[in-house]
Image 1: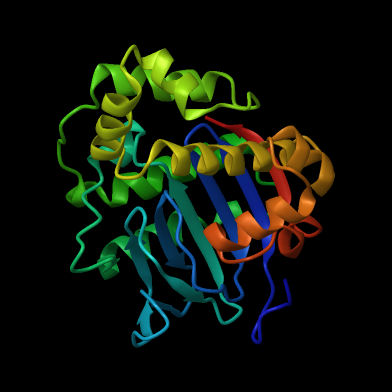
Image 2: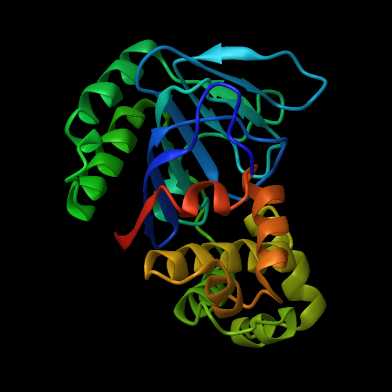
Length: 263
């Protein structure tokens, strides 16, 4: 991935169960789509976001991008905090995002200012995983007005997701996950898509991408991370990463410090 025209990706990534936190300089991304809910806050100034290549760019101090929504970011070299949250997590299921008529939702100015204040110490090079955990809590607390109760996941789908997360490096097949849920194949696929908002096959791919980040967090090379997460090779991981995140892992692997202790 080339450097963006107005900056580079240079910061810190914290990897945890069901979430990824990035704090640092932001460049631009290509048009992409991922399963996570994305919370994006510019720590000064504004970033530009749009839901697709034909849409108009809009400037935001902070925004929430719903799960499975096509979008593109122009960071313009700004310092940003990005929180990627799987919608199946407790917090993700309570976060009121994903309006199909508004895939990118502005965060109120007061909440943006409070999140900026909460990140003041986090931009230090000495930031710890514990500080990152607190920052995640602060961010979600500031979005408390957007929280609402949602119907809990079907227990069989929840059990299947917990099985996947419990063995992240296993080469899961959809049939294996269906067996873990106790449902027949077709019934499982239909219920999973209804409950989660994407196919089980797509979810498994997202989970493998998260596993690759975890491998990088442990100091693995790009090839080691790819193979450890079940990708054919580093090129396969790179193509998938770009399609789902908008950049390639080599754009950040050399400059971003990965940590995996985020709870």
